[in-house]
Amino acid sequence: MLSLSRRSRLPRRISRISALAVLATLAVACGEKKEGPDRKAALSAFADTALGSGRADPNSAARDAEAKARREAFAKKKAEKEAADKQRKQLLAQLAVVPDGKVGSLKAECDAVLEAYTEFVKRSAAEDARALMLFYDNKRKILGERRGKCLKVGSPKVAACQANALRKAPNELKGQELAILGACIDKFAPQAGAAVASAGPADAKAK
Image (cartoon, rainbow, N blue to C red):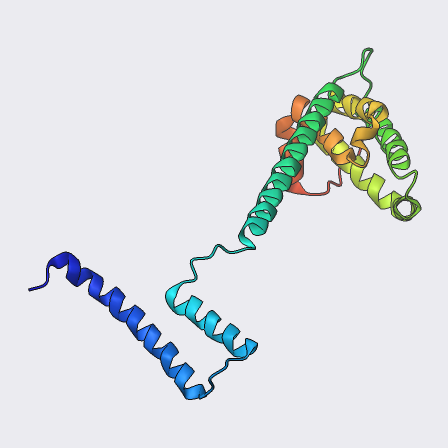
C-alpha cells in the first residue's frame, strides 16, 4: 500500500503528467518537424500556464514602485491638508475676539458687519472679476440675509467680533467669510448660532 504522504503527491503528479500529455498531443497534431517562432512562443506560453514558468514577473517591481509612489503622494497630500486645517483653525481663533472699546447697539454693530462683509468680499474677489460681479448682482439679497441673521443672533458682542474679524482677516482666509462669522458666534453665542442655523434665513427687524 502507498503511504499517506505519497498518496497526497499523486494528484499533483497526475495533473503535471496530464499537462505534458496535452502538450505532446498538440505537437504531434501539428505534424511539423521544425517549429516556427510563433508556434514555439504559443507552446511556451501554454507550458508556463500549465506547469508554471518559475520566472519572476518582469513588471512586478515597476508595479510595486508605482503603488508605493501613489501611497506616498496620498499621505503627503493628507498631511498638507491637515496642516492647512490646523492653521485655519488657529487663525479663526485669533480673530474671534471683541475689539477694545465700547460695544454699540445691535443695529449699529450689524451695520458695521455689513460694511466689513462687503469690503472683505471685495478683497477676496479682487482678482476674480466674475465672482465680484456675481456679488454685486446679488448684493442686496446677500446683505439682507446677512443683516437678518445678525439681528436673529441678537448679540452686539457677536456682531462687534464679526465686523472686527472681517476687517483684520489675512489673505489665508480669503473667501472664507462664513467661517469667520461663524467663529465669533461659536465663541460668544453658540446657542443663538444653532437656533439661527436651524431656522434658516431670518427676517428679523431692528428695533
